[in-house]
Length: 429
Image (cartoon, rainbow, N blue to C red):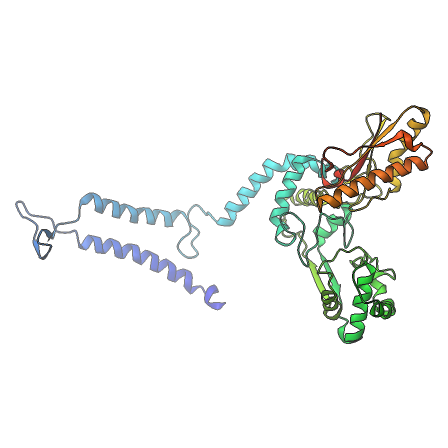
């Protein structure tokens, strides 16, 4: 490093640059001092080409010399005004850092009013705003896509942010904390502690937890080993612990892969997944907090966001996103890949139930929808099962089944974001 921090090099560069300009000037001057005397002709050089082309010792054209001298004058002027001579900053004191800071300041002044408006809204509300999502997407592509992919579906070792499966939690506050402070998920190596045979037993037990193909004998032996060594983090039932970032082993979602060989590798060698903190990456500008807010809102709105218990979540509703236009219509929202009615969805259906009970002749139409991810055939079946779940809730509340009509929409892919798309609509007809 001393070669690049020595004070010799700025002097060397400066001397070499100026000597080159002066040397070029002297050389040109030495070749253009003599002019033709009146009547004198240019000397014919001894060599010719092809018998026709001859070389005369003519002075250089004055216009050409003028251009050459002009470039050297320009070079001297440039070096006087701007940096180019070692450590000399130039009369204008221009620096690339100063240029960058000026551009950042101008951008802040331009976007500050926009950011200020979004900062007054909670993350769930911002996630539902198309303009905010457009800004958030640009931030995501700049800071996050290198690991999570431009579509946020992740890769081996990098979580999918669209599927609703969260190691640490998908509520707005947790997402903000993850982006701000980063995460360091450590799975210690157990290979030397357990030995190869017990590692294989635990791997087969883990496979059994999510219904994957496994060796039943090995899994039975692995259950005890799991309880003694793994349950402290992954819980006795294998559902994991978000506080520690310990994955749920029962949901068929695998960060590094769910084959027996990969699970054995994970148990034997451990894992160390690092999510870097973005506080420094986002900069130290006054808009850093706004960028963080918009980025968190974009991630939240990708489809897997979970509402805080203390606040509504319009973009990722688990219950009624907004009051229906009339008591004759309602929307019920479902979790990713699920067709079970939640307590919030049941509450959202209650106005329909009350209206139907108050109007014995009223009939109810039910339509199920799904998001755009995954298999089209499986999604269509899932949308139908969601509609059936709402029908069953109505019949359980005392509404006769002959008053309920299941209607398959022409397009079962719901409109809006993924969370909005995973819904059932019920209306009085």
